Image 1 (tube, rainbow, N blue to C red):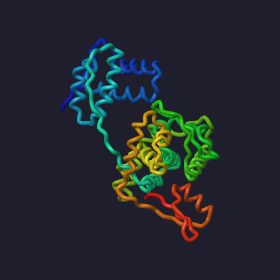
Image 2 (image 1 turned 90 degrees about the horizontal axis):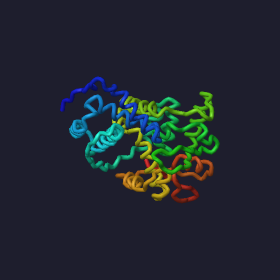
Image 3 (image 1 turned 60 degrees about the vertical axis):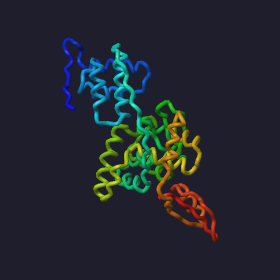
Image 4 (image 1 turned 30 degrees about the horizontal axis):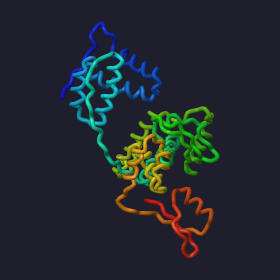
Length: 304
């Protein structure tokens, strides 16, 4: 469907000014900066394609978009804020969000991408893989939120979720210490810009997939690192409450999907054996789980 960009009729304020008023009102209401930015971005998208002061036209434009109902619902929610602020009456259409089971990437595939990243972003992606932070939570993270002795992370939980304490792997902590030391960062410094972390991942996974000749790598979204961490938390504990707290979910319904995410096609494992306590500690830190003892050897396994 072809659409025509609508110019705001004179002497009405420019569209950017109108959208700024909406965004500023949301900020005064206590909405988080990231939420306000997302709503403003969706409103700017609509404004480029349809007159925001004509609700039926907006409804028609959204209905004819070739996209998921979830995306349409997000646009409807954003436009509702515009209508509420300017007292525009409209009947809000209802879109049913599709429930889709996300395929969890293999850890080895995630690591292939991370290994080609610069130190700054390798640290960010390793943290997401280990403890399942949302990208926005990664953007909130300051050095003071990380115990550089124990590897414990105290993130600011997004989406009004419960606070939590998480622990990164020892190799991730070592990498993070090296990054902080190299750049002489201070406790109050933020570590990453959320937008740049996303942009870098998008470019990185594509280039690595092409370089290695493994197209499946290009299909791994940044958010899939959180899915991986969440599915592994449930897989190892079989405890849905623990997994809910680990992910910082407010509603257990959001966590239940991770029960399905770990329904792997095959149970394939890497197996290690050792009779040395130090080696055993290293294996546990690497994500291996103890299985049994046989002929004086301790056997460990980790899903491929």
